[in-house]
Image (cartoon, rainbow, N blue to C red):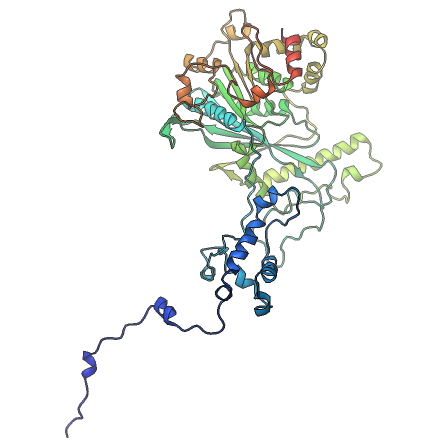
Length: 541
């Protein structure tokens, strides 16, 4: 039986090649009605102009007219239907998602981003609070802080660096959260036991803890090049951090900060030079007379060869490295309530009637100490920053400050008359010591051991730092504009080899004040106010 013949001519034909998706879409016949932007070619441009007119900068520029800040999809749709001829008649129920797809996708990493065309340069942005108020002095301040940090790296063998500031206060209360309720929750909770906050905060008056932070920074001693090819010393890197918690019944001022630093730096390995980068607030401000005296007292009592205290420009405190510590501290207290009542009681001591003053204060001390202990032993127990565990210290509520406890007395004497200062022998002697050893500038002070044989302290405590370092600190360079790179200041290395200039000579604030410097021989004092001029001339000379 013969088999039937089979046609195999198809083997000679061109093989079928599957078309790509793009080719299929290019030849695919459109279905349904045309797209809105095709039917009305000017609709995208009209939407774009409307969004631009309601941007953030446009909102900030408005002075006389009233306008919205930002646009919603409904705002854009209503505007288009009222301005684009025929659009409302053809599309009375225009879907706002159609308009949304003309913009940039909320997240390019998501597959849904394919639906967004990016024809309108707009999206819902992430919140950004990094803007700062423009200040003509910011550049100078930042350059001077960098000089001081590079100095620490250049002489890393002798210089210890700390960055210091206070954190926002922590609330104690059964009906108020320890930190801001708007902070995002970043911890896991049971599905049936998620945090449920009070609809309003009901704070217990005055029940606030103050955290003071001190961040050690390790100088490197190495150099690098910037984007202009100039050589710099590598800035000190973040290291161990320390937080001191204080109750409202413990003082929080320059004396308490010096007490904290006394505890941190009193070690056998203490270096002879200390650099502090601080905030410009009242309890750290380097140009407050009472603060200057306590900085000088710390310099003297700890036998430092030099103490340099500097700060960033007012408004630029976010640049202080210690500020980075507060974010993890705050996150660790999210959703936390710190009780303001004692066990077995239903009211905080301040709301209990019939208590004597001493009894009320004793109860409050227990409440504050328990709250601080809870933070240290529970919420911040495993807190780490910059690769190191955060060291938390609780200052017992109501305990007297030590070793510096006479802040109020010093402040009273300095704020009084010249006769009152002369009458108080201890404060007067400290005042004279301060002004003999202080190089006082706007936003910076430098204490250095002098070379006078008549100075008992300096002659009986010879310097341990190198002569090059002491020479640098006794005539610390002030930032000056670079001649080779307009718009920039000289680097620290360039400033060391340049001719010395007067302190604050290129600080705009110095010229705006027009107060000048003290003209007494050997006195390094830049005036900061008219009262400062009068007080210095009467009391120091």
